[in-house]
Length: 484
Image (tube, rainbow, N blue to C red; front, side):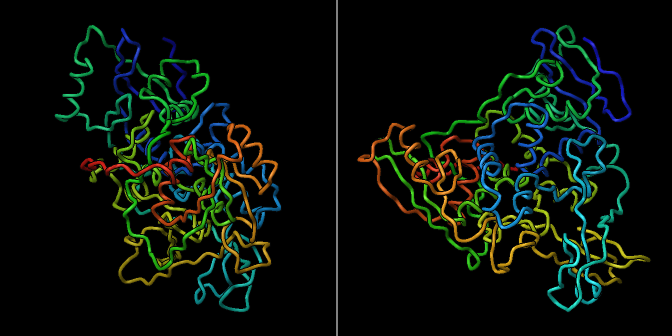
């Protein structure tokens, strides 16, 4: 089999291949490739949709694609500002200051420009736009800041230089020599030299992107990427969960209930089919579901650790959680992957999902430095937590508004998350397409709190009937979680 020409920007992978079945059994990976693979967890969902599209790769992740297309089709006047639309279509990665050091980068985010207050030592505000007034003093935020995050650990991005593992075709990350790996090798027939061969591949950016896309829909992404040169025609929907309630694995996690604001939703339901035809909602519900595009992949996967996937991308999250801590550069670097956060200032204020924004500190150690890891700040040095002005409000005269959309507004949202401005014509077309008669529909009002928001999130990733699964299906008995 022809091998790719080696390139300084490529990563060399040794793979053990089953010759008879033409399948990768496992690959040997060093810290460079481990970093690239683990970095998938930091990428926002909207960015993954855009990456796949830009590389002409057919990938449908539940109804996430439909959400993305809805934002593209909505009139720009619906959004509070152009920034709000861009935040959803081109979300930034909060870990980009680390990911920019990856040997292979499938995203090449340009760090957003930031400006500080002239009285920054007293009022530590940053803005993504120049010459806006400081909320604490009369000065403007006009001095540009380069937020180069200090990292006292040399070598590697997330894991230490010299770390090495084996990664199976379905993305199980295992130590090179362990009882678990040897048992797995025996099961897969890897110990029979007559049926296996060792091949070396030079992996570039295109192969890394194909690996990411394939892992959503295939149990054999390495085989699809390395041994099958022709892409899968159309990868289709990640999973079909019609007929059962979808539960988040973390629905009981702590979210400040005092800050929780329930959202009211009017469902138009077919009585005979017991499915949601569409929902009539205000901008607060649309803000919530649009915010799914800003969420890092790792945050979403943690909600569904035991959920049955068509692909094997969930193994990556489990691999990070189980990865030997001694091989991470620090606890902070592991935290970046296990609990990825949002870019400061870009979250939806009614945070029913419980995700946090990244926090940055400025401290002095011979010179001013920035870090998101408070543990590296010398104990004899003071530090200040940096605050960010809400970029979504830039250009919006209503400073009390929240979210991405102008208030007030009414929308129609279909079961598969096609979002339109409220329109009787569109609602009629939905009923006609579903072959539902007027006499067969009824209104049901439901309220969205933290549990419902997490169910909506999970359903949007794995189902093509999101509203039906989130609101009409009866919850199943909770499954016993696997030990992490």
